[in-house]
Length: 204
Image (cartoon, rainbow, N blue to C red; front, side, top):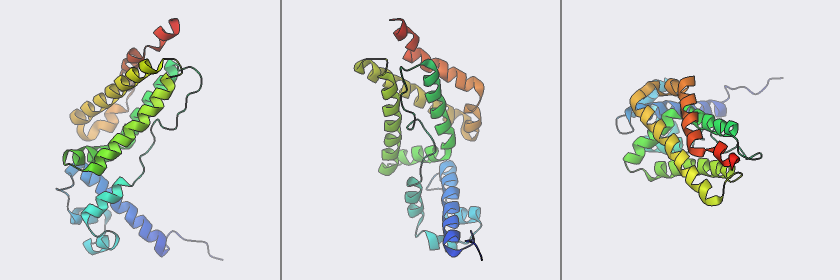
């Protein structure tokens, strides 16, 4: 009795579609949407232009499908567990950095398209930050009054996004490796701890 094979027509189409989206995300993120051609995407996947058009009618349709891809990781799944501690805060910082590393190409593409006026890209970035904002605020509310939690939430998000964007611009393709080093992580944790000042709050 034969078992289902990954070479079945349906799975083959899904695999090719996935590889097209991955190649396009890489090329769009590095070269830009306008400077990337369908031929480049097809070549990166190892298929013909005609085969690519079997899956997507246009380059714009590929971009639209990329926006539907799930983002990897993030802080959204972390729920408060007792009073907020520096160790929990470090965990949120690490989750944020891991999210940025895991989605580097997509975030670069998002930034490019936002500058080009893509409203879907802008909505996705705002949605991503809203998830982070809700998670961080929920943790801070376990130790802070609402107004103070709100202020610190915005300050920490501004710090994390600002430092990540600055490093992305200066590091270029080496950004994931530069961020995923102990010195960078420890420095970022230290800055965020200085903003949150959880120890001062406990002392009060």
